[in-house]
Length: 563
Image 1: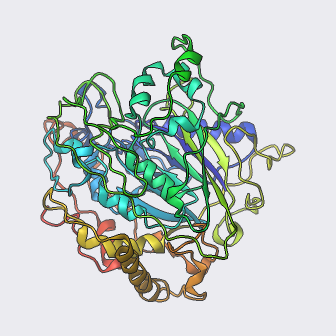
Image 2: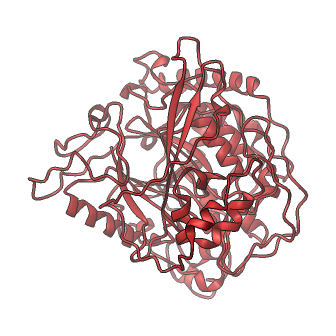
């Protein structure tokens, strides 16, 4: 499958799709899927802008509303997550995931789906220590505090994601903490010299996300947020008797080859003696807290830095971490009390018939924001389990399933240079991930939308038993009930020791389109939203897609409850 990855969108959809079309034209291929790594800005009208945590000068309607109202249609299936500059009211409508517009799917605050059997998982928002262990009581109209806390990642979501099988692709807005040590640190500091202090202190990146990376060990991890392109490789080396999340800290792997698919960039930052700077930074033995929001002058500045702790491998604790990129309007946070970040639950030890040593690699790629001469869009290829049986197309376009996994810095080996036009675009099958559906059911009692108090979570052994029970429920009540039960449940990897998250059997899939159908809730730009009321926050709009999702799983709709 050929996948395009984009960094921060900032509402520039027309430019992103135009660049994608340009790459397809000059390389004579078609892209099957576009993934956008946050700051998507799904602004339907001017009232939505009042729910976005940016200074007034950045409150621009953008281009999403044209796709929302049907004036335009996304030319390729687009999967997005949220960042820290979003219309949080609309993303909350689709907390569990759903169609933001035709052909544009939001993964939710956390989520996992199958695209042609490929497991694509992700988490929205950024890390902020004092909100990590809380519930989600935010309600419209938002005040300055809740407008920010609503997009801060929660322990609830990290714990749920940690129970997934290893994804093929994981998407976040934040960078995992200390990821800079696994790539070309010298090159990063040459382009972003002001990162030096935060890298030294461990404040660059999210501690829970590094714990999640070490636990899930996905093949690819895509991110954005820091407005710079950066590649890294994390090698997970595990002995059979060891837990995968206890892998040793790998040596960093610099990547420097050229890539015809990336946007050229002019680096006008002062270079200085980057070698000396890079050499002075050693990976900390105990990473400190991590304010990972990009700062523009507006600040969510923390009054006091909290002491830090290692990233989230088992039993690690991480303290408060202001992780947002700041614009010049964010309120000052009162220094929060230190918050313990419990370790992400980890998969059980591999079975005894595994090889003596297991070596897995997670390729990390962060991209810039959509601006001229910036590295904001790249195209890669990933093997899919059975593309021909899972996808539909009006032409016999060749599948990339037989091609090896491809680095963003390499040209496509499947490029047909004799053709005068790209092959017709395939339509991937988007399906619910049954593992995620089971996790959602199992953890729903811990989903708190009424207060900031978060009840304690079950231990890992209990949590996995709960998920296994709900996985059986999903199998009987959803997959088999929908006529998709032709294969045994073993055909879909479960979280209990699976080494690949791909799903190979079409009959195992529960298609998203059979449950969730896009429907406009708020109006697009009109007299009601652009006139005298343009500066008011909108009311809460119940979204039928969330209602349908909760009904499918037989769970209470807490997203719309009391709103």
